[in-house]
Image (tube, rainbow, N blue to C red):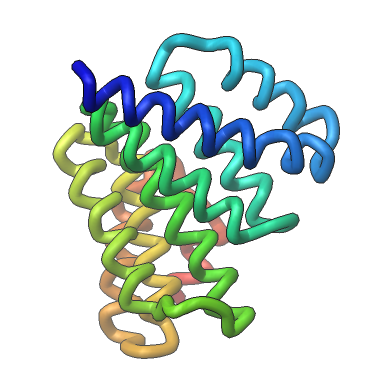
Length: 174
């Protein structure tokens, strides 16, 4: 449809702006992800690439990391890619936490909690136990400074959902 063509063009413009600088910043890893992103016609693969670039960019240019996560969110919503949407919400939330720690932007822990809760709902809807576990741990981390009891509930639920015992998760719960 016409709307999808416009959206696709917007993604291409955004990515041609973002990816060359990202490739310079992280070297071979970003180069390889960028090549896949530019060459693929598969939307789910594009979302995965944008999420991975967002993760790498968090440490170099966190604003671009947020922009890539936003692009992944938009594309995954339009293609009904729930797994990609779950990962994109998580990537954006983690990038926003860095901005909050740096005192930048209009975001707060509330915006991060909303994103992690969206990721949790999606993981539950697709019965992704590991994704649910990670979302609970992420929520526990955000809640740790504002409400330790809610944080502990999320940490314990994340620990309960893990497929294999994890000493670090268990230590965090204790």
